[in-house]
Length: 506
Image (cartoon, rainbow, N blue to C red; front, side):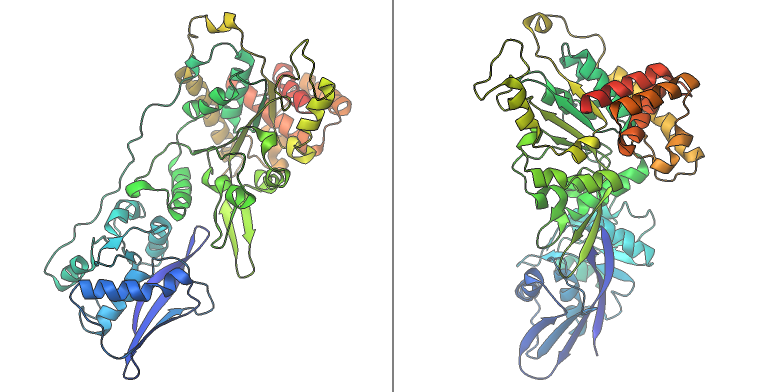
């Protein structure tokens, strides 16, 4: 008789059910795992064998066949160790055969029988709860799994012996409790920035509407300092957003000790990052930086230093909010609704825009044009706000710290975000919470221009030769500026500021 234990296989952040079937029969002594296992799954034979021996059990001198069904679905990862070991224990009578009914199992085994943490426990727990199953997972992942449902049956053993004792009634495992990550030091404050008032204003507008932002200025102007302080003015994640972000982090193995946090992600990859590192991919189609920054910020410092092909790979996820990774044997989709914030120098030497400076590479204008040409026009068309930062003078640095810091700006940003959430809920646009995410078909309903602003936009669109995308993005930025002012309609003053940012982008 074959023993069956339920587990999962991951496709993106989706957990697909997998049936672990174990059959022990007389014949040549062999331990076989079939069902398209990868190297990590195939090596589970040695880990399972050693863990069972360390737990005081011996494999029978018979033919052991492990089938991972469906057989045509590729199986990747080490989380199949625990379900295989438990199915073998049930087959040899070490635990009751029906003890695992109604449970989904995942976990990696150490050679001494300990159950090690694995990635993807949160989406696995959500999928198990949807099927009416409980979950058996490593002890370190128990707090993560507990977020799936309050009344879900969860067993989080630290070893095979502990789980076997619980099943036999010798020991009782207490259910894990959801855990909140205690964040480290407080975030950097905008009060640290002296001068750069126009850049601070652009940062506030970008935070309020979730808009993409490009800061262009000489070295030492404060571009990276401003970007690092963006998380301090962003509102915390909503419960729905927290679940989305945590599922991606769980699949990526980034949930430390199973604890969740409502801070928005802030990812800052180096400019040497490959396309697979940025958008996702590799042999196992893992999530990239754009997905790990979902509902948060993706900061690209020294933007032109990235490979042009890598930068252009951002165009599709910036439009759709998701990234599709296609491989020969699978196709994975990850969420990627991120806020792009980038910084760059005007040219390679960084001083091309400085009055009186003569570049040794040739005319300043040509040096700047060659450097900025590394960023394609279609990508620049997707940037909502471009702000020029001047060099910071000594007179700015000796001034006292500004009176307004991140707390005051964050309050205005939160109020503007609430207006946006209420607006799109009234329009029936589920899942849309920021102006930047508003679909083009709903822009006219969301952005109500007064007659003066409408005439200004018509003239500006002709003179500036705005693309359809640029036209809609200008309207969204103007809508955000009006939300910061608490105005129901977009006026000329709001549209003027939005056009100023678009003028710099073009």
